[in-house]
Image (cartoon, rainbow, N blue to C red):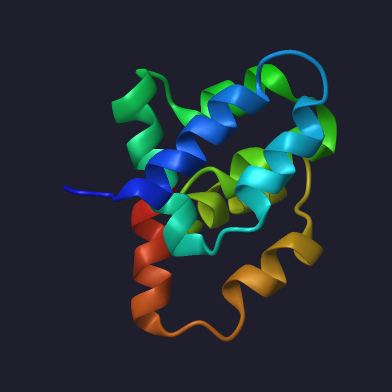
Length: 119
């Protein structure tokens, strides 16, 4: 699969962002400005280019809610939504505030995609 020079450049920008100080701002610039399709391509290509999962790199380089948010941006949308459902249903009780935006208003086909990512 050919990703093209733009995707490769973003992957290199992410790798460079994780060296030295100021990782958070550089990662935001590299990842958050991309649409979901581009982020999915970057995630796949990053592993090919650098031998590491992008989400694992982000987990190592960031912390707290900010780190979790960037980790969710580093995976395909269905995988991110499945992770949010897991977080919302983990432990005692559920967090409906997290579940409603993901589940409500979805078509049966979209729910099936979410179920595949979840299980």
